[in-house]
Image (cartoon, rainbow over all chains, first blue to last red; front, side, top):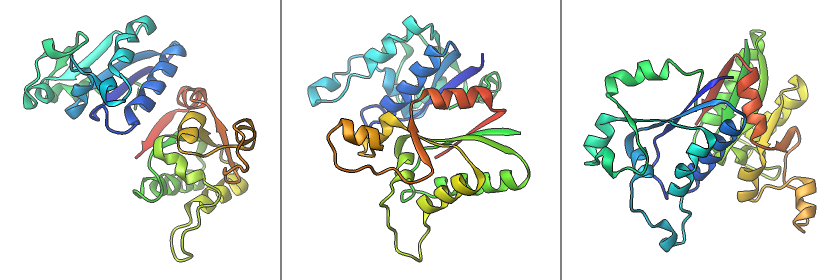
Length: 116
Length: 129
């Protein structure tokens, strides 16, 4: 088993990159690998509560994040500065997150075998 | 060292695919092994058979085909990413009632399991783009 860290740094509802990344995440989890997610930069908006993309005919990616628990994906990390710079509080997010300061992200990444 | 490579960028939007190609050439020259190259996201645009850039420009699809033919590198295109963008293999074109297949020689179409397998069996995994 390898430890995978998926870096989520793109804003949601902007092309299909996020959906395709979620497919890789679910595949890794289905392969019984250790999977963690790190939300950085505009990627934090992927977890913002109260989105209704279906009203614009777009896919509701937030519901896929809510299903991650079923796949034993419970390590959800975010960066303090990414939230602060965008005026977002952890309580605005749809999943409980562990916060890391930017200076500690490097150390966090070093604990993983594969970073995607 | 055994490498798995993922290519995410199209040949026209950036040079990341070309960087991947150059890395692979250098790695092989230095007796490393390329376990697999996995084309995902817009990276699947490297595998279009009918891509016909002007002759004085980089011929990425041709370069990959040569790499597969001459050095036996396993080039895998993600099926879901490919179908989204209209790249179908022979089987899939028939199944979907389309007249032609678009996959260039040397590539094969398969699923995300091939990417996961590559990350698990290789010593190093590198993403381009």
